[in-house]
Image 1: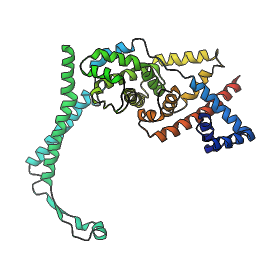
Image 2: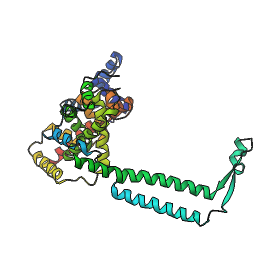
Image 3: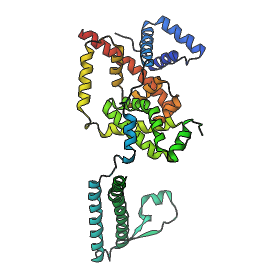
Image 4: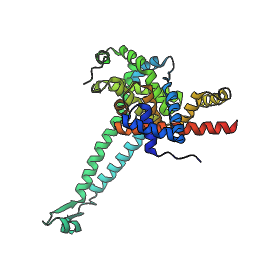
Length: 176
Length: 185
């Protein structure tokens, strides 16, 4: 059975090949290699990989690589994170949510829904905070208004990224 | 700030001389393609990823802050693009071309049993894409460890360790491959 070489010795063998050891470390590892056949074999394996890898050459792309790149320069972005189809679906979702929220508010569903959150009820306050904390008023109607505003902002963003921007880019390219 | 001779060319491109970009592409296409190929191990896909990276680089050129060499910045884009191709197209890109390529390599293998390069490539293909790219960049000797770390967005120490591990793993894999080959003879 082959003797297992400890990882730190394996690392030292690579440093030895790279000439990255001090004179003292070099003498020490050379002594070990002389007295351990498994270590000498491992050094040969690593040296062989080193020699082969040193002959590694660059790969070459197709001959018309540059022409293709130059031709495609106007096609950016090549892949939008949001496709038109997904954008339309997302936009529809945003609109439906906004309409439902607006209908609920106008129907007065959240008119009486208000409460206060008492931070002093949280156990942590007694343990770590000695001073009493204020109560936070919680108004359902206000929260829903904020959600509607955020939805509208998101809707405009999606409309711009997924529909308007690609549309005008296509028109500009068609005009060239 | 680095005084890269390519900055003059970049200034010309940014001033509207778009055709000058072809010089940059010509100069860096082989290295960019090699990086993409080391990550993707598929020629058509590597070509597409490298082209995509050059197009991105052109559009982001005004944002290049010239703190590093242009090549380091460009190859980082190539590496990131290739990695994202790898993630996106894992299942999709089993092209016919690739199948033919693999088949012909297998066929040639009968004639070149002793070809070290073939076994080295087999061993390299058993590494993960990050280790394979790091160790290839190291041996291509174009960049320092710091620059390789910059391209791959990692700490220089992490890259050093990864390259060490990759070399050791390559030695192990090559030994295994040769052992298996010897058994089949």
